[in-house]
Picture 1 (cartoon, rainbow, N blue to C red):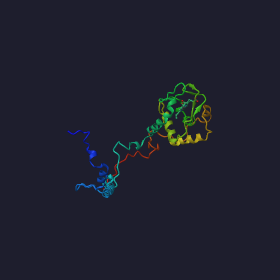
Picture 2 (picture 1 turned 120 degrees about the horizontal axis):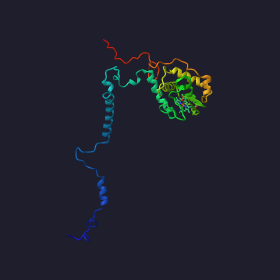
Picture 3 (picture 1 turned 120 degrees about the vertical axis):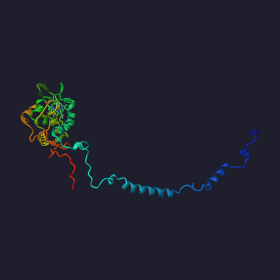
Picture 4 (picture 1 turned 135 degrees about the vertical axis):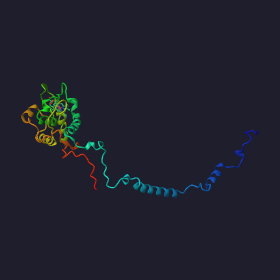
Length: 254
Ligand code: HEC
């Protein structure tokens, strides 16, 4: 065994690692035949072909419309999707809209309409079930100063709930409070009536209603034609539909 301190081949050899390695680096690499790297142009060309082919195939082969007979109209499965747009009895449709609008009232009048010490009840309230113009104007303008509801006195402050309320919302919430919490009314407030109440309310000077003003000027029902609760209406527009025509399969043309 030679002594490592005396045999130092690196220093004895006349090899310069740096120049030798860079020279070798400059040489063209040689590859085994068949394993040469592919030219960048071939890759780009291939990518372009894939791109165009994909577009062509995607356009025609995978369009599901091509799998369906021409002029085929898809009907919804019985009782499934599309039921939301089928005509509904007016009472159901209005109550649905009204229940949603009532969430703005429930914080004060309570979800069950029973009220509490500060807020008068809507359940069994003569102001709700009586002439319809009164609750309409109270909702649209708010109310202050003393009021007696179902035999109890209140002197609170209800803000106007009318901002952003259209005829649909107003009719919905009116029909809701007049037909919930044990209240029941024979006819429904129609969209036409709700719009009349909104128009009438705009003729006022603004400001909250008082019992005094209601008693002096607004003791009647809202003008317009009321709606039978059983009328079939479009659940979206709440407008009556001509006939309760369920979608039928078109008669075979033979
Ligand atoms: C911030 C609380 C508050 C909200 C929200 C509110 N109210 Fe009222 N409401 C009152 C108060 C307070 C009174 C009584 C005002 C008074 O004493 O003059 C009242 C009175 C009424 C009355 C007449 C009295 C009665 O109990 O029948 C009706 C009808 C009514 N509100 C309906 C509604 C409806 C519908 C909504 C929602 C669209 C609504 N209120 C939202 C506080 C509220």
